[in-house]
Image 1: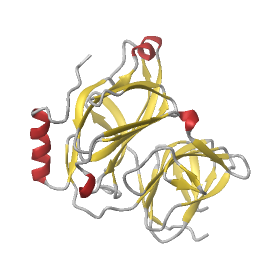
Image 2: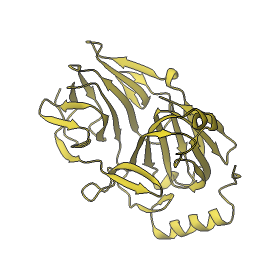
Image 3: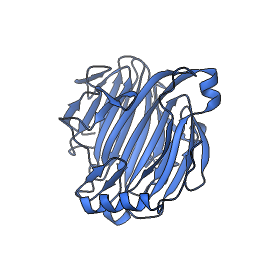
Length: 290
């Protein structure tokens, strides 16, 4: 297999989002976005209890993209204006298609806060093409145990197929665009080759541990955590130097203009203003505060 060469390697420095300190590998001054992926936040691991719970996000709107949560540790309650209410637990994925507009709220469950525990997850913003920015909103929640898992020959690499397809195994999430999302767990000395389409922009994000890519590039926590591939190969080789967890994302680039403001991702400023107006007029639905 011809390996993809490396286009960029990025850090995942901490930023403040209100009271929440989290890592932000996309966007950064050096990597603005990796089309169609607009934003990636890695929150936690935090210890949450009754005295420390900054992650209770009340009702807020979205339009024009897909906000996605990969929950690594902990327990979160999701509510939205489509009348969905679900508890998302470790390993689960919630995939929201905001489309023309949705209001949702999320945060650790009251029981989790009362007991105390560790919360960690990935928040990904996946852009929608102009032709789908105003489709009806939708919500998908798939539990950890319902995803199919591919294991390497040496049994040291496990790949949770969340969306898209890998080695003939299809993800449980239904996507609006051509996109793959795989969560990879690799033990020390584990080795595996992974493929994704040459037409896709591909990236891997290291949540923890240390790995080498294509035998010559190292990713390590607090050093370099995001790797963006060129579109010139069939995939890559991964080797575990420590027990590690990574997120692999790939997708067909939309090659469209992007205008974002706050919770909206559209194609121009006029559409942003329309989104603000529609939210204020209640056209994205309602969700009461609790």
